[in-house]
Length: 410
Image (cartoon, rainbow, N blue to C red):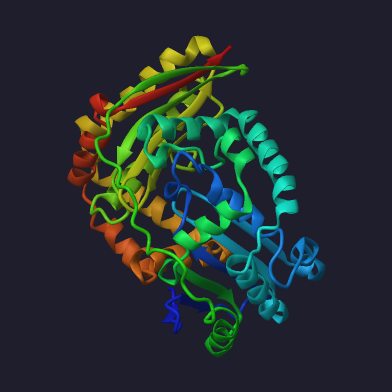
């Protein structure tokens, strides 16, 4: 179902490509194995700030040149930062593919971090932080990460803190760039009606010339998880709640079973256990979700919901009841088959989005040095047994391991 080409440039940057002839749009991106967990308490927020500053000037482009480069031809240029990745990516008609590669490589590798733009962008990021604090759903997840990971870099907010944002200078970005950006930590990914030969030509022209400046990415591992409870008071009408624990890292054998469990429990389907209980049966919530995020050396399982403050205890009790069911009784044969087919369908549909496919391919090459075929993932799902799901539930859903964060009206 998936036919990717992967090759390595002379400087060590890997390239992954999939040709899809049925589209006029090419999606491409540079995915860097660098994120907020590579920071420390003194430079918290610099990875995300670097992502912003990449658009503010290079050796051959100013801000206006960068932001209009693809917008002017109906394309898009964007970026994101998370705990372990920074991605710069673009979408454009195939005739502008070379322009997209040129601009992406320019902003990723040749930013100059102009001081004038730096001072302006501090205000932009502080406004982003204010917007984030005004969105309880977003801030709840980040606050819960701090509960799970405590003082480890994994628990630090990606946006940083106001005091660190205000003090950054050009030298800080140059230093962070030099310390962390290594070609072994970079993948160029592209999806569209572009031949392998064209991808190779442009990758050699625009990307192969970059030389490593930093380390290969030794990170402080997260260990010694301890369950905790925390209560926050915010200006909200609902009571917000997060329940969860640390979980398996990306290479763990139990990763797929936990994905299956999480999908049954609180995935996007309206038939998830938590949705049927909290919303459909009792009408206590508008939405309830369960998530499992796997990282290189750890992971996080979490359930999020909002409800009337007077209904909070009942909702927590209902969530505990659903978790107990997974621990106490294995799925029936019919339930297991249905759960597997549902998650396989969701995975297949997600690949219909070529932008998401491109980003997934880049992340996969960073993690596995290959892109697993969808059939391989389906096979791992099909090999999952009810007893394995129950075993995983008894570990991850163990009530003694669960942490709690509540956000209550001030």
